[in-house]
Length: 283
Image 1 (tube, rainbow, N blue to C red):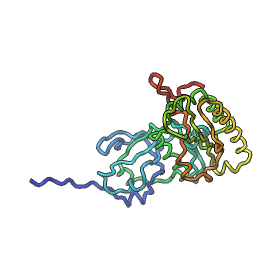
Image 2: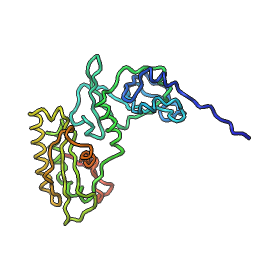
Image 3: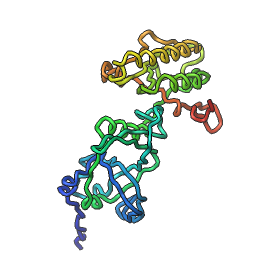
Image 4: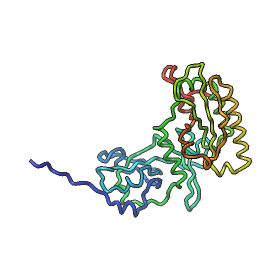
């Protein structure tokens, strides 16, 4: 008996393209919209609001709905001003973005858990009119991906660092608002005994536009110097001379690949019950 071949459900990719849907496009919905939110088969309500398309362009335009049934969205809230500590993807739990459409700039606040999946054919009859600029789109995508690619450090290194975490955070809160964050490179990823030393290079990375502002760079340098003083006081850590404030435009891809963001919200200490993150340590 010949197996019955089910017809392939397709989408008009030309309509999707003509409607200007792409990664970073903004989708506005009014009232609860009854569309697929988790899979192509389950019907649910998409809450009214403003969303940003996360799905890559090639997947949005794929004509085969069986291969690519849904588009991924993230809910965004309009806010009146940004908090510098939430810019550039520095905080893993909240992101602030500035948009600059023709009618004037406004700001968005996003939380990583507010993501939805909608059937792609829903986009056939709606048009995109606003888009996240390339720079902010890169920040948004990296921020989402970062949730699944958290930097890991040896437990013995984390333990040496732990008593200085709050002090470093306070310094960065005061001096590091206009930076991409603190990045480090360890001499080894091995667990070292107490009598062996981690050789550490530290960089505070800054966008070129900020790096070229003398007054702002001097402020950032003051904060970086304070951080290096604290790190130099830690037993079992040797801070190397190549530690510096660096422009993003002056660092090579190879150098950047060797660095890890020192993200205190993700540091954990394995010898404590249930684990403890720096986010749980009150300042």
